[in-house]
Image 1 (cartoon, rainbow, N blue to C red):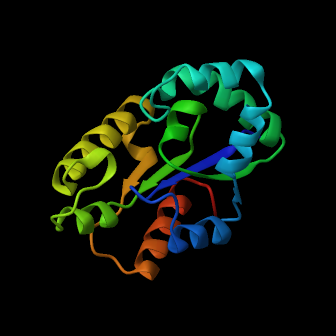
Image 2 (cartoon, rainbow, N blue to C red):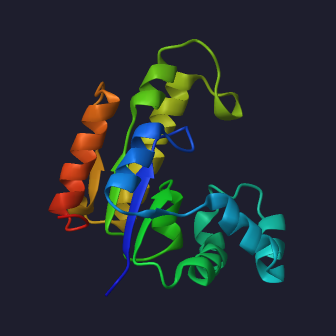
Length: 172
């Protein structure tokens, strides 16, 4: 049986409580990005590649073989996995489903504060949408991803995500 790999992204957050509930209710083992980083730190070629890149997020395709090797070493026998971040679309093939929640980006875009790399959050919003949507389009067919409607409650996000995963055959 092929692995079932579910990605949830809640930019710019690394994770969200509602999404953790989805992973649990869907019976998905959550992949620890920290454990992947630790495994890569023990691999000389991965360490060298990471040291040579200015921005691991933007250079995901160059680093993908190293992430994939660490992922396979830690999870090759796991059948149902939950992954945080659309970076995993680049790192491993055959993603079963991907769910994106834009609420935090939208919330921050309504402030006058600055965010990552000192962009205004409005600029960050535009860049985030373009970047993530380009990645989704490049690595997945449209039936494999769900952008949650804006403004849902946490429970509504859980319910919509679980309904989508049922449709994708991840849960019955």
